[in-house]
Length: 338
View 1 (cartoon, one colour):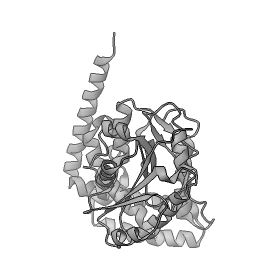
View 2 (cartoon, helix red, strand yellow):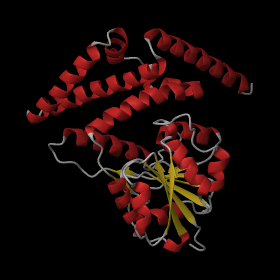
View 3 (cartoon, one colour):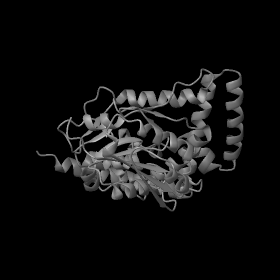
View 4 (cartoon, helix red, strand yellow):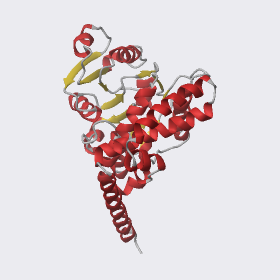
């Protein structure tokens, strides 16, 4: 396929220099012509020396290291895209280790179609049998990427994952980039909503695969709380999609431990953490998965509470979203001919 386009790889990072170096080493081993590759690392509020150490490293591609105050991944990705010169943008997370043919596969999957978004898998390594948490994550990602496989076009915003995503720079600009009001989570989903609303094709590119480095249990719970907070923003931005978020389906854990009797929350956390340890020691995998799910839901609803405040405020939000969704449905019906 000639001529090859110039590709700009954008990597947002925050205090993960060891993982980032693995990510960059994998990009240095690409089959794609490295003189047609630039890598833009955006250090988002880093305090681990990323900006000082990376320029001293040597790579066979052009490396730019940008620095900004901690503003979130959406701002970092947009900043990198603004500085990019390539016709094709490739977004990769700092804990994603590319296969040697990843960049080439992102280019080839487009064929004659340039105005498209390509999503590619970044799977976890298969965990040990006694790693219950690892199995939960492994199963989730295998199911997610398995659902994408064999699908000509992806039609759900939840599939637009920015951990391994390519898009023409002109298309990214036309789509409006990532929404910077979503600082800690949910920016992928919101970007996917707008991409699909603009009828920009989203394709799955399995050959551009990568490995995702392991996530810790603490990171998973922290992410759940961030998602709860960001989903309140996402729901207000796109109320027609609110029903697909956990926010719209209040469960027992959120209702009781976060809003009705918040002092019970710390007790739930302590007892839950103890149960996780015991169930792993006793090889009770089903118990572990149930308790993990409950604790993650608790963290999610903590995030919702961080954003809305009390139960009355949540009820008002749900009511507003319900009214907005009904209004959207009426408008859709009116727009249908006949």
